Length: 77
Image (cartoon, rainbow, N blue to C red; front, side, top):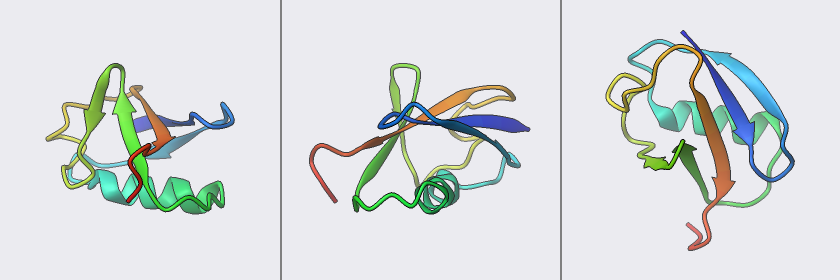
């Protein structure tokens, strides 16, 4: 399935192809590396709900075409 990952800091987005078993931490790590982000702590959000990086795509209830926002964690890491 394909998900859109949106960088909330600059508005850019990218499509990622993932399996249901992919951990959200993998998506987070890839996005931080892709955009060469320097902050240490980020959150993932789908709509109004925060996503747990320790869960899989399937466990998070995400489906093809969903948008995940990547934003800095205001509480830090």
